[in-house]
Image (cartoon, rainbow, N blue to C red):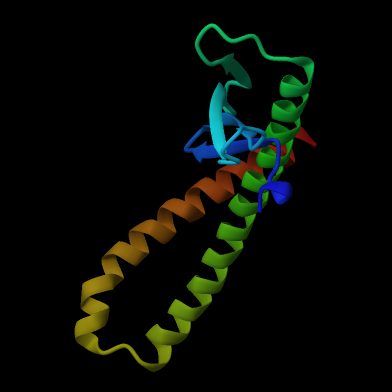
Length: 133
C-alpha cells in the first residue's frame, strides 16, 4: 500500500484544506502524515503550518490542488443546479399525478414563495446581462 500513496494528502474542509506530507520512509514503515499548511480557497491563501517553510515542490503541489479543487467545486455547483431542475420537474409530475389535497396544502405556499423568489432573481440577473450587451 505504501508505494501507491501520494506525496501529499489534503484533508478537505468547507473553504479549503489542511495539507499533510505523507511519509512512509521510516523504520516501522508506518504511514505518517505531517501537517505542512492550511489552504483557504476563497481567499487564495496558503499558510505554512507552525514555523515551517514550504518548499517549491510543496507550493507547486498545493497550487495545483487548489486549481483542481476550484474546478471541481464549480462543476459540482452547476451539477447541483441541474439536479434541482430535474427535481422541479419530478415535483411538477408529483403535483399533477400523485399529490393529495392534504399533501398539496402542506407544500404549496412554501413552493410558490421559493419559486417566486428564484424567478425574481433570475429575471433581474438576465436583465442585467442583457443590458451589459
